[in-house]
Amino acid sequence: MPMTPRRTTLSALFGALFLLAAPGCLAREAGAKPPEPREAKVKLPETREAKTETRSEVTTEAMLSETMNANTVSVITGTPGGTYFRIGADIAFVLNDGDRIRVLPILGKGAGENAYDLRFLKGVDLGFVRTDTLDQLRQDKRLKDVEQRIHYIAKLFNDELHVIAPKGIDDVRQLAGKRLTFDVKGSGTDYSGRAMFRGLGIEVEALNVDQPTALEMLRKGEVEAVVSVAAKPVSVLAGFEPGDRFHLVTIPYLDTLSEAYVPATLTGADYPKLVDGGRPVETLAVGTILGVYNHPKGSERYRKLERFVAAFFGQFDKFLAPQRHPKWREVNLAASVVGWTRFRPAQDWLDAHRDEGAPQAEIERFLSEQPQDVAADKEQVYQAYLKWRRARQTSLGMARR
Image (tube, rainbow, N blue to C red; front, side, top):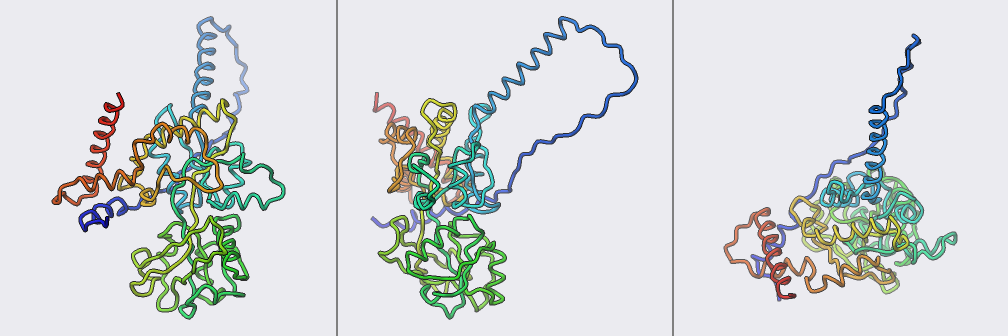
């Protein structure tokens, strides 16, 4: 049933605000202790009370270290200011809860490099990867059993393929044999973008440079197009001043493409400066998923990830708040990913809460129950939704008894 204008307006409220995440960093400072004075000292005998206090300090530090490490999980994200970094910051802000659980976001290069970080770096528990990541790893003959090593917790959102080129280029197939940039080596664009072009049967001369540099090269005529595979709207692309020279190029969906890629569109609302007229630009997309290293069941890191799954799924409605990234509104926690295995604690949680429904379905039901004259204030609507959801969960709990 099509949504009424009122419901459309309210639905838009959940995606109206972007999170302006400032990058944070943690560092340990190691400073040399000042030298002891050369004057002779008389060492007094240590009292029983001093010995007890010293042992107490050691015990307290050991307990603090154990507690912090037992409750911290790390997630490899992306470059500063990018969607992955902002989504990782959201997860940390929402889920960090004193000594119970702490999420530590780590800067990364993007989905391509994240796959290796998740597989091999001992300190990485989680990572933002893509639905074509397993295909990427299978092509590396050095790796074995990648499907058993990396599982997923949830599919998150889609990353769209963007190709910016001169307005004389109307179809991506006109770029065959041309010089194109694919972001830095190891980025998601570097792998997914190239794979998409191969699936389209288009051979190009691929260069790896960062996006701001690539856009300047495009402006100077040093490359024919700039490629980006990222969640729309991409801030660096939206801020690009194309004048009357450049635009987003149409990309068709072909049967030769991997099943990891799906049709998508880019609109004038996404990129007012890059989309000609009111007609959407056809393109492709690849799914981003929250990947996880499949630690042995019963291990310390497995138990930490069990706690993370319970917190992530159980508090998911907090990610729908207006100040969080609008891409959270696309997430369907129950959605499966073809060719991937869901992490067992995540599957168990979903099986135990199957009757509660997906967040997006809940939002639709909530909006359908609101009076026609409900105030269109973002925070008020969100708080009303949370109140409605708590009441519904209470009623469901009573019904199960």
